[in-house]
Image 1 (spheres, helix red, strand yellow):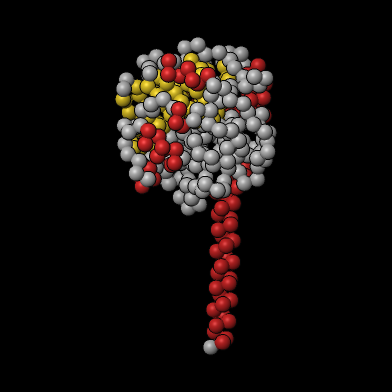
Image 2: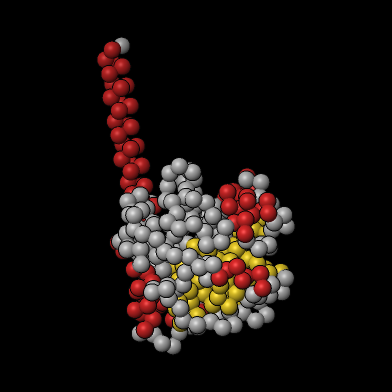
Length: 327
């Protein structure tokens, strides 16, 4: 009896060890970018905010970078929020996980009426459930556009009027066409639901402007190969941060030079750098993304790639080169 018990204990111990090794290898291979966020410099500094967004109510066809990947876009008087996160942390928990270096440039209670929210993918720094609940409480008729696979998540949290999109699926509403397009990234809310939902970017076409938001993406030839599907883009929001070290982040996040390459591949006249300066998720210095954009921009005078302070109101009919550096 004792001998059998010893064999059983040994078997259990070996099984736990084997399972632990397999789990460790799985997590290391599939979630290196996530673990990269756990060893960053939260004393990196901060960037300053602008208050020119307070002119937004009188300014149709404009945008404001609220922080990270959050864009408040006004098209023909309609206010659209893309990847809104107003929480203190990009995390499933309120007490741990990446926290903000700066507050949202526009407090959530001072936003104008929002008609639609577009979500690029379900990572916590792009799909923030507390923010979506608050937005619905303040805008009872709000619509949520999400990638295929994320509708159930929102519905479990009592979020209504949710529409899922496949890649390249479009819908027309209020004289605008919304198209969800693929990018090079991934999705997950836990360690065990990787790529159970889609990820991508959004193209919004109004009568006067076509705007694209690229969510999170690594560089991929699909942008140049699918140029006819993308069509003409007047303004693009392209991530420029969370790219170091490259051996970990290359397949998930473009660096500034690759962000400019996306704009070149798609012949975009005006691009704006997002996904930096708000949550410190990798190891590049805080101001390196706009510094590199400024450097490469000088080498490419044909197209404009800008950065600015969060909160700065930018009009779509008078786009000019801007940089946060020295402001």
